[in-house]
Length: 448
Image (cartoon, rainbow, N blue to C red; front, side, top):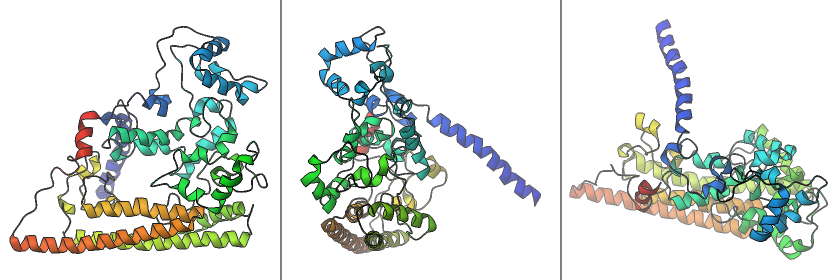
């Protein structure tokens, strides 16, 4: 009995350092993240992740004082100098000049990162870093979430760059208050957020501006005093930052209950009830407390209806899997290229909702339809409900119902097809090249 306990314990003790060693090794390639050895950065990556990839220009040599930087750049890039002159950096008692952020050796210039900004803005930087304890989705973990995904390597390079352009909110501060003014007033306006928070699967732009809050902002926002802090009484209607970064807090996830709408949650847990109280308190800046509670309860009901539809679609796919009617069948699919664990311990599964790598490409049509139902239709309904866009809620659920009908119709057709193939003694082709063929993966095998 003792030997039976000792052997698993020894294996576990050995597995821990081996696991840490593997993770350390996996991050030692030309890229970053867990799959850094499988991709190489494009030059533009230096702007999206400057700590890891930015390289200073080698055209100019020398160590320069700030006055010379300004004198030269007034001729080369006058716009950034004008922005800097209009900024608090230039107008404060202790002027923040070029070298404070970029250094003064032109051969070793740096692109400022949150750590650089944090050397002065300690409170904001501390809040930003502390957001990691809330998990994802959050700004501070956005880049890690991108590069640590299995499908990051297999997506088209242009698509990957468009992803990290927004996920770079984790690696530089000018995503919200752009250089070289770094104006807090700019970050308080919704336009600062919709550069990234727009379109599927995060139609915050469309749903906010279609709401009563958004319409009021569009009608009157240009006359508001945006120099005021994000506190009660300063604004006639809330913006993104007022609700999600209340009081100027540099965290967007500290009240997050439904997260991104990607998973069903129980809003009645003690933890989520505390989060709900924070939302009710915030909404009570402008609304009656009981009305705020009722409105947020309606959001819970919308999510309950959405997940009822999604679970119905998942059940259809799981029944097809159980009856071996999907092609390739769950037990015949090769391991996903980046999933070494799946190579060692293959499991019969389909779709990302069962843990399969979420490449979304080179899968059967019915699986792709479920993905679009979950990632586009569902999130459109969720964002509409959260932001008060009633027409968007109706449209999102209409699309979900249409997707469910389409999935059920395809399932019936698959059953008929398999029955006809069996009668005709037709054997479908093998699945050995799944993940490896197609317009996306063919291109990426050559260019990543």
